[in-house]
Every structure is written in structure tokens, then in C-alpha cells.
Amino acid sequence: MNPRVFTVHYTLYDPAGTVMDSTRDRQPLSFVAGAGQILAELEEGILKLNPGDRAEISVPSDHVFGSREEGRVMKLSREQLPKPDLQIGQQFRVSGDPAAPPATVIDVTGAYYIVDTNHPYAGMDLRFEVELLAIDQR
Image (cartoon, rainbow, N blue to C red):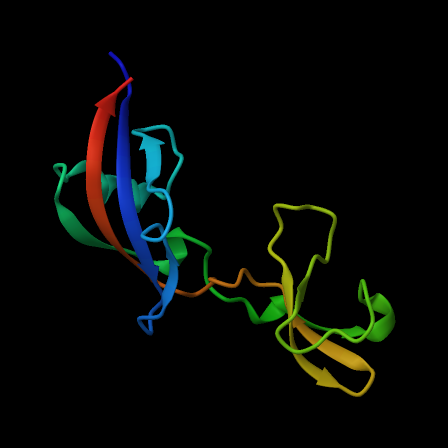
């Protein structure tokens, strides 16, 4: 049997209702059903739709990026940073692993920086508004 390819437009919202990402202003997202290309809960909701249908799909934080961990907030000296004079809100990589979430500067106290290495979306329940555009057989 040929795999089914689903094409959707989506808008992703944080818990406060702020748009975090959307395909509405660019190409829609296409994925192969069952290939693990998107979040399982999102795929499960989309597979129930017919072309033209719209739905709201929620994904709890523990199924996405996990809970926020206070142990991932650390105090670093200026010498431990990849470049001097980082500002609050700036991000940088703690390790050379491009898949690792970036660290975010959350405070500066004298010669020390307080950085958060939690994923930026950790602890956030995500809400997707999706529109199924097409289902194709490949």
C-alpha cells in the first residue's frame, strides 16, 4: 500500500494565545502518515480529518518538550560564555550539539549571567489550529 501524504496549514499558539508559528504565510506542511515526522498527538488529530476540515488540537507539555526544570537554570561567569556582553534574552549554544536547545540569558548580576538551558517551550501546553488541505497517495 502506498503511503498517504497529508498537507495542512497550521497555526501554533502558546498557553497565552500568542502565535508561536504558522504556515499561513508560507508553504503548507506535508508529512507521511505514520513516519514520525510530526508530534504523535498532532498527527493523530489530523488523521481524523477530511480535506477542508479544520480542528483545534492540544498537545500537553509532557508530550512535547517536558516540564521546566529549575536545575537547568545556572549561573555562569563571563569567561564561561561564548562571547562577552550577552544581553538578557539572547541565546547561545552551551555545547557543540546543534540539536541541543539553546541557553537563554535571563539575568545579569555583576560578573555573572543567569542562563536557562530548558527548551524555550518546556512546560508549555501547545495548541494547534489546523486545516487539512489534501491527502495524497504516493
